[in-house]
Image (cartoon, rainbow, N blue to C red; front, side, top):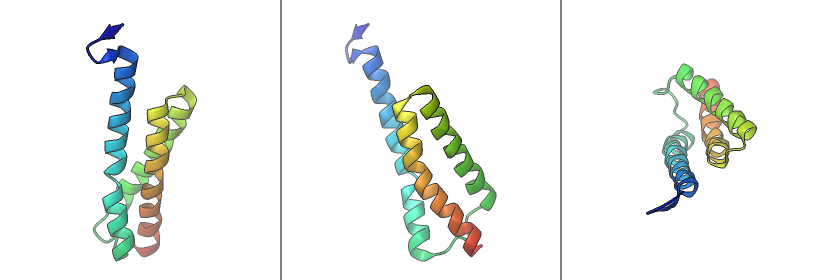
Length: 92
């Protein structure tokens, strides 16, 4: 089905890629700040544990259904999430 913005699957893919970029990018400022300052005192261990496991699960899901935006976003997001979680466990 073609429309004003092109075919519907193309538009859906673009929306997914934009959403993936934005939610992935949102984790990098916290990761950079945490790594630079080596301070995790204001971060919740439970929150980062749940988020890291959740992101890893979304990555598996994206791979299983063959969805590029879900797979790429969660593969990239897993890196800063895991780094923050590891630092939280080590630094307290």
